[in-house]
Image (tube, rainbow, N blue to C red; front, side, top):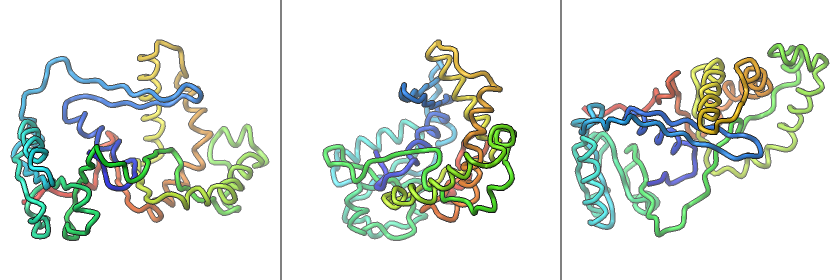
Length: 266
């Protein structure tokens, strides 16, 4: 299952599903060593159906009846009330027909799904992906005004970049070198943290998971806070600007839950 356009939203969906199973999904990246995903699930399997999903309606519209039937069985196992629609009936769907719509990507690409119906595209694994997906800490962030560079944003800048040489260099790169790269993005989705302090908490959680999984000694809390301060200026610029620049914004709470998910149908 994949979204029609490339985005980091798949990561948020995976995290949400893991939380529904009473687990945790933690991601970390170490320069030169690659990435690490840590999945924690309770030993005791939660009883099905999951109460968070019980009774909600999920509608699947697929070209292959066998795929639709198998998908309906999986949705029922999660406690959802599954419905199936044929491709010929996709034009008649309304937003109030279900809490969740899962629709074959070709039906969406052909414009047959009525506007206003929030949905997840089902990508046929036999078809090539529409576009590669990528995620990054500072994707799409524009440069600041030069006047904003005068005052340091944290103790690291005040102590180690008192004349602003480093921050001016970074800002010049954002203005000169990165716009051409940002222009190549087909879609940009911004997973917006509630505030910058959440960045410290989430990065510390990732660091602890990385150390636990690898058995290696990593950063302690003061070292991690110093590390994050290197990215504080551009991160704060992202919080200020990306909500107005991204194609879609998903606001997260401190537990990384999506606050602006579509409300269930009555």
